[in-house]
Figure 1 (tube, rainbow, N blue to C red):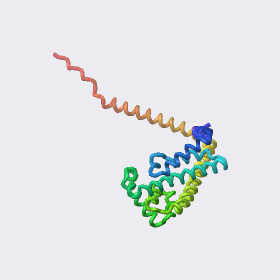
Figure 2: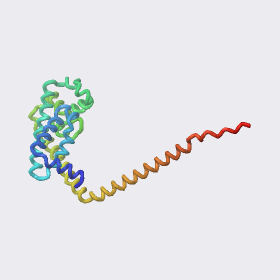
Figure 3: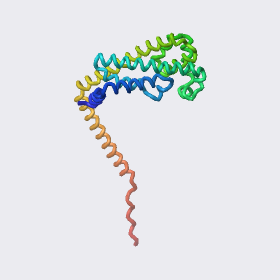
Figure 4: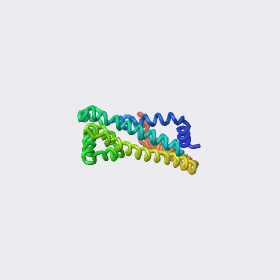
Length: 221
């Protein structure tokens, strides 16, 4: 059995509640103001989604991730509501880039609540839009439906990609595993031959440039 298949089977063999708990926690952190830059929730979600190999697992993971994403958005919203535009000058936003905060605010001014849905699929900006929406005093009754719709679509997309990628990886490795190992073996052999040839050439070059032995002294008369 190949390395990829072993890894995916090992992940799938973990208790599903544990996988869901970790995935949900990472998603919550990824969707909370700025924490997504410290917690790679999207990457964790794609990896965990390889275990969603049945419809029931897909639906449960989709529900958990959607709820956690909405919760993260809501935390960001209330932080923005509480601290307002002072967040722009915070160390965290300065580290992310104040231009992204400004871009989030401009998107909200142009699109209103719809910006919350759009931003879900925009890197960097999406982690700032909820807080920016709170700072802009966007009505939570308008914010929440847009957040739910965006989170549901975003989670379904990523879980679908992860699930399909896991199935494809197993299929490819099963179909071409032996051929791939053969290609790798040939590649290693070629690399070894090239290395030995270069080493031999370097040794010859060093021998050619080595000072000649000291000439024999002419005998004295």
